[in-house]
Image 1 (cartoon, rainbow, N blue to C red):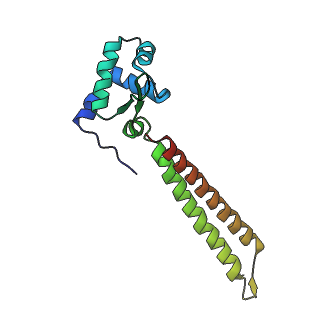
Image 2 (cartoon, rainbow, N blue to C red):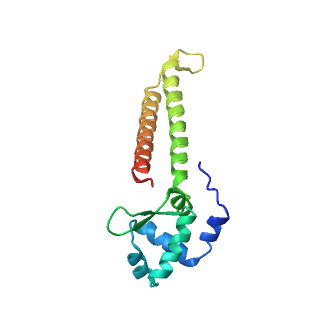
Image 3 (cartoon, rainbow, N blue to C red):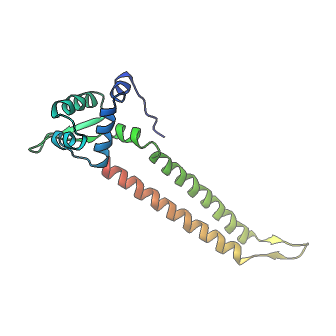
Length: 158
């Protein structure tokens, strides 16, 4: 898990209600210009410009000036600050997939080796095989979800 290291600049940038509102507005809709933010927050353009400069200096937002209008969007650091719970999804899915994989292998092993009941012959219960196969399929499905989350994270990373 990537911890978020905050320095004095970050804490100063996050200490203003207006800057927090700007971050939330950029989180809702990326690619806002100063005019968009000023209209949405009912603030003067100069005030928004001043706060955007502080947020840019702290590395929480970035500016894209390649178009006619300068637009602003969140950096990955700001996204991790606003949404710290998103990193735990991957950890939970990975742990669950490892558990289902080992459980599935255990059930398949139990079917292959069989078990003895009251000194009788070995019993190979097909239910063990079915459960094991279902757990293996579930672990593969969880890995696929992890792959999709990772792909989406790369696509939308800032």
